[in-house]
Length: 565
Image (cartoon, rainbow, N blue to C red; front, side, top):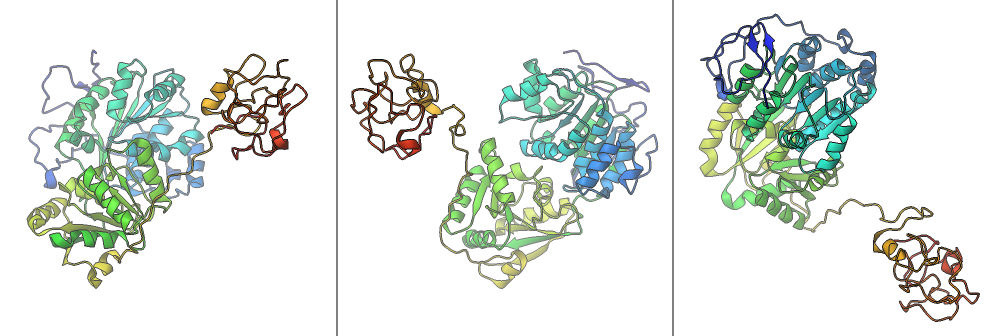
């Protein structure tokens, strides 16, 4: 695919194929050789064109009235700092580079501008007008949920494009037309290769948590997608951390961006307490179990999927309502675990880093690193599940003796000075910090969600499963799909059984348990609850259920319509 280039004050918007990255671009300032900031982050670029001043209320912004009304209805009355700082510029069409910790309001910071600038336009089939790229399915769903009420207010159509879900349904949504697409890079690439999506009309592109996309190896896919959007379009890049991989995106794709770093130190969250608990290897599991049994919810992070599943099994065995969340679970299993955790059915969510970004749980006050994270970025994002949107919270890390030196270095990289305490299970200090307590010891089972019965509603005329198919094999005039073997009409003159000897829907009981004229029981050997035979040459049902609507011997009601098993 040929990559188009945007000409803006003589600079190239997209990287040219085969051309080396340049250290300086007109209108962007020289970035080659800039010193890296602490913690491996790059020094933020200097904006050439002055930024517009921040606002303190949404009313000061050039937002459509319907968006302002929806903000009030959603209880969003005062913009968070990152919103007040970036929205005046993003609404004016400027590129934006924004850094803010998780839970700081980044989603609406880019979402309101994207929706307001797309309002009034209509996307053609397979050609979205705005794109939000995110690293994970969970973050994609969170972004979609957050933007949906505002998109509806402006009559804009949202499509979520992620792996692990039906690609056919996603393709159908794109063919039907969607102004805004929220996507993970891999699945969007697949849809483009299938000719189900084109990006040449995308005028606004958002990269949310770009650093994680780089960490996950998505950078080649991200840059390939950015090369396909409109070269004169707007770019908004938001993240909690900005490392050197993000520097590359800034240099190659953002044009004189307005820079807003709401949190100079990503770890400097005044409402979050950080504790490092020194534990012994032989006591670590008991300590973990008591923390999980606390009176309140907790997210516990482990390194591996196997370790996550193993801990959940042990917690359930001692009475802790736990569930696992990791990349080895199907999307429906992950959604179910999150839903059960949010509604309180599950109190301990045991997860790998798949839950470290893009998951918002209201009033979650404790995050526990059962296994210490691999680097400071993972620590910040794991901890970012608590103390969100101004709330308070605690992050606890269990550290074994051989892990202490690495943990000290990690905390220094994160800019955090934690409280360090040596603890053992059962001690009052552990309870004071985490609320730990002894579990009940009574095994628990987390029930799966109740699913609707497969048959259609009574009177729908539709059966379910094999029963309705068997009804189609009955002789002509004797059965319709989903009905009784005779559909309430007259039987053939022979009065014989249907070709299957079974009712169409249940596949077990005949309409009255007997043949219409001979009085013999049907081939299933099950009589209806009344045992009455039809003697008029019609089946016992005659459009009604056997025994006047009472259940047949199988114990299932028969209202003359199909009842699947």
